[in-house]
Image (cartoon, rainbow, N blue to C red; front, side, top):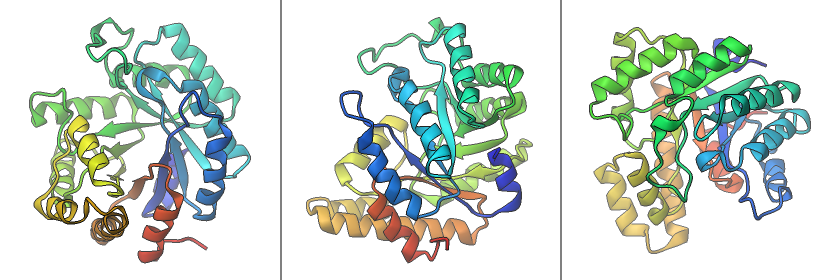
Length: 290
């Protein structure tokens, strides 16, 4: 199924993001987790790519297995960092040969061992260029990333929104936002996006706070602000993993319920491969599908 068709018929669309195991770990380690995620009956599962495309083959293999063996629609992350045009075409062919219909097209992060990676030397420097190429060469449903607080490399949020509009006009079917912890930031972003003529579905990306130190690191990398209420929670419970987990689940439930009450198109849960905690969130919100 092309996921844009799902967004036309269901609201909110509930989806998960998972990541492949590290390259030195067997693929089987993710399949046990997928059994647990399958029981939660998400509308689709996206599979991340790895910095610099390090896990691209695993991404396609896992996305294919999710669709064929677990009977859940999947979406493969697809970046252009460090790839030649021939490699990109080969990846498109691999996706189509596996019967996959959906991609999240991204510029991507630099390789972990190259923090000063020069993006200008890529065949495609921006996600919009990758999207244009995919659109011309295939019939894949294309999702793209949106940044409620602006991309970390963009000097002004206004410029980032203009770039987002250009990206959508290039051929994006729907948007998935980078994580955020303050819904007011998302609502403000959505209002400005609509004012620019961005009318495709936008599903917010939500990362529950399972560990305080982990969230602080991730937020610093992607430029997400942490509201005072969440700072207080992390300061109070960060030293106790069990209490932090409970408080993080409670905060995620509060955030998600507010988004649903305000009519969002979907909820994309950045699961960190933690099915048990995601189940608790869905149970608390009465979102477990029968």
